[in-house]
Length: 265
Image (cartoon, rainbow, N blue to C red; front, top):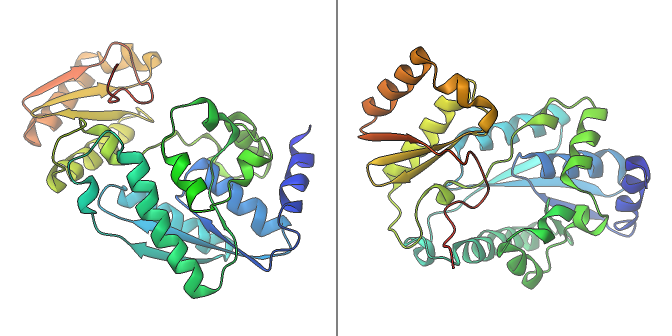
């Protein structure tokens, strides 16, 4: 089925909806969902973005700017770090989704929204996504998944709409940069956020800065290995990280991969 036909199919899911609230992270998937529903759905479409300690501020700002550029109603929910995830437990993702979407559901009820939608896509069902269970428990709709949109199709769709975000690297919350069962330190979260922003500016999109006490493990795409090992760039990165108090800086030879902090069985 062509992307355009699938977009029509997606919008038919909400033909009886008066209004739709999109949980908008500012990433590729939720941007595509918000844009499509706002442009093609007959319902009133609004967005809400979570602001919390483990979501990079620049992602929140990008979400604000996108909604402003599209004239979409948009609110920010400020959520504190919940005690149930402060030790970064292995089921952190499930707990986090339950907490954050619980807040979104409460907000939706107060504002009169009858449908809440998130940006999960068809590829997510083949990956380890414990947070999906929380979405089902809270009756959150995942229309991109329901319509069968893959990540590749979503990027192609964004590109066809001439939205520059189409090639934005995948991102995940900052808690995934810290080992499980370790107490979350807000200063460490800021260190990771600022360091990853630095790596992106250095020309390493999607770089991950995994923190193991005073050791940083850099995950980048293997296509950038030769560049990061160039003497001038390597020394500049070392200088930058040491100025942030990091004693050892390592390059993960496996490169970036999702879930490298997950506990191995």
